[in-house]
Length: 438
Image 1 (tube, rainbow, N blue to C red):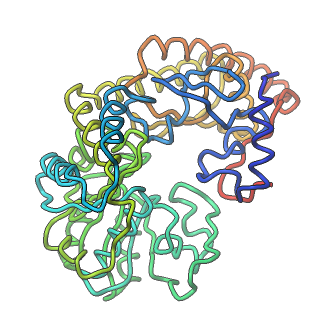
Image 2: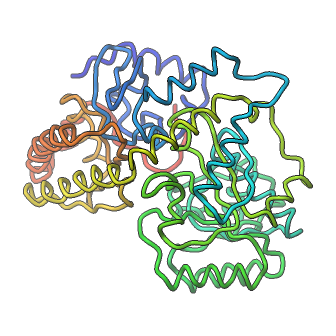
């Protein structure tokens, strides 16, 4: 049994004080196995995380939800941030680094001419959609993929509650979203041209933008990309590429650079600040200039830390060719999962794009992955069905991780054959999708 006394006590307080226990669905303990997942950290460095009870783990889970692409408390990023904190992070005047960051992002994405900044991915996507609606003087958005918690996106579930189920998180409740937004957000399936055309037809003449992630589980087909481009040109509307998850993973900048998408707007967050709050909306001048005709403004978008963190992250990412390392580490883990599952006769499926990958059990996933997480914690790993590689992950870390996976898969195989996995759980089964936490 794990010693999680302090973490468990704080969880009990959090349930009473914070609706939903935490600010991010993906960090709730029920997403991993409530009752054994440590939930709260005391400090972190590289790929090591220490919880409140003094337990230390190597993080082979979702790496700060994909935000800490270089690793925890990266020395170069922290040094730059600490320097500007000491100089002052927010004043009546604007930070010069926002101009430098705009130039840097445009340098990496020569198709773009202008940039705006916010501090989180969801709000940056809302900014991008607002700009598109102002530019086109139209309202409806066709989209695929996951794009956050804002009204414009959740409106898709007003007409059909499961409309977003195939776009990453199931059961997203549109409560609180004005009913008048029904049919303003229309989903289509990735790599499905027929479904895309149906969404376009449903939007009719009121189509303001096409919004999509460049990649999630599969690479786009050439035909799909061409269909997207042709429709955006035909309708004279912007193509908005959401790079919040994919950006600064497979290349120096947005994944669209490597995959072949040609956006009018691209949105970044997560990896951009290596854990510090920053998001960016970059785009072509013809559409970005309409930001001045909408009320888009916020005090904390002008603080200095996010800009400086982003600049330090980008400089290190490019200098060290970090994307190649991220893909290499994820490939080692992917191959390890495949080989060990075969060795122990476990039926799993593996998906995602390297370096953001995941595996799932073909049967009784919620119970089996809870056991996997439980036993990996005992061996000193934060581990779940997902793995997001960081620059701080080294090959020796992967070897230690896969040795532990080998042992846990061996035990799990026997328990599954004897139908006794549930009896061995010390925490709760994993809760998938969206729901209340009590």
